[in-house]
Length: 441
Image 1 (tube, one colour):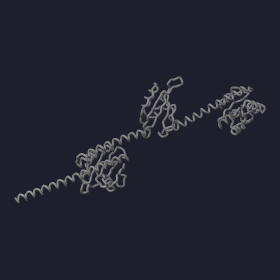
Image 2 (cartoon, one colour; image 1 turned 180 degrees about the vertical axis):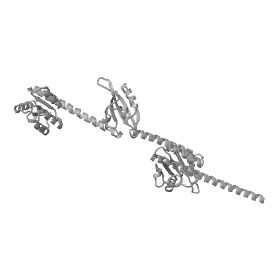
Image 3 (cartoon, helix red, strand yellow; image 1 turned 45 degrees about the vertical axis):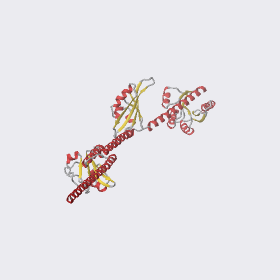
Image 4 (tube, one colour; image 1 turned 30 degrees about the horizontal axis):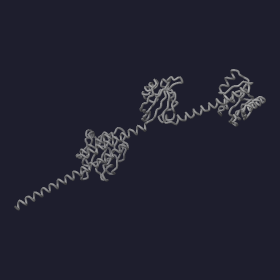
C-alpha cells in the first residue's frame, strides 16, 4: 500500500520540521513544507498531496483559513487545521471551509495519526459518494423514462431531467409542483392516493403538452427508514411509438378485412351502378371522408357514368351524365397518376368548383387501371383533417379492385350481348330453314 502524501503548512520552522519528522515516522510521505498561505496554494496544486496539515495563524496577507478556502476551490483535498488557538470565533471561521479535522497544539503522535487516518477515510467515503452521485445523475439524464418521486401532497421532490425537454419541461421549474398539474391529468392524483395507501399501481394515460403522447405509469409507495410511507416513486414510460404501431396494425387489419369483403362482394352478380356504390361506401369509411365519387369508362371511351356518394347528391346535385372533367380530375385521368392535395385551391392545375358545388377542402383521387388500361376514377374529399400516405395506399388498392370489377362486368355484359345476338341469328336461321323445308314439301 502506497504512503499517503502530506503537505505541512506551518510558519514556525522548528515546529514544521518536528511535524514532518513525526509524520515520516508514522509512515507518511511529506511532499512539501511551506510557511505562507500563498505558497500553500501554489504547492498544493504542484504536488497534489493526499492531505494537508494547515496552521491557521500564518505570516503574510493570507492566513490558513483563507488558504484552505482557496485550495478547496481548486481541488478536492482534505484539510486538517493545526493551531494553538481554540476560541469560538476561530472555530466558526474554520468551519466555513469544511475541514476534515481540527487538532490543538501540542498533540501526541497517536492523536496526529488518528486524525489523519479518519480524515483520509472520510475523504475516501465522500469521494465515493460524489462518484455515485455523479453516476446516478448521469443515469437519470440518460434514461428515456421519466423517473420521479413525490411527497404525500403529490408534489415532485425529484424528477429525472433526461427526456423532459422533449415535452417542453424543465426539471428545475417543475420541482415542487403537483404531479397532476405538471402532467395535466387528474388520474395521477387518484393513483398517487392509492400508492400512499400501500398499493403498487400501473395505468395508461394520454398527455397533450404540444403533441399527443401515450404513457404507461407505475407508482409504488416510498418508505422511510422506519418503514413509514412518506411519498411515492413513479416511472412514466412513453409508449407513443408502440401505441401508434398498434393502431396502425389494427387499421391495416381493418383495411385488409374490408378489402377482402368488398372483393368477395364484387364477385357476385351486380350492376355497374351497384359496383360503384359499393366501392364508394368502402372508400368513405376507410379514409374517413364525407364525399366520394366513382366513375368508369364505357365502351365508347367516354366517362358517361359518374356515381356521386349520397352526400354529394344531396348537397350539390351534380350531373351524373356529364363528361366534362377539368382541373384536378382531368390531371388524374391525363397522367394516370394519383393526386393528393390538402389545399386544392393552391394547386396549379386547380380550376376551382362551379357555383353551388360542395366546398372541396381536400382532395384525393386515383385512376382505376387494369394492365395499363384506364378503366375509371375513384376520388374522395371532405376528410376531417389531412389525407396522408396511408389514405393514398387504401385508395390505390380500392381503385385496383374497382378496375377489375368494372372490367369484369363490362366484359360479362359484352359476352352476354354477343351470346344473345348469336342466339337470335341462330333462331332466325332455323326459322328460315324450317320455312324452306315446308315449301319443298
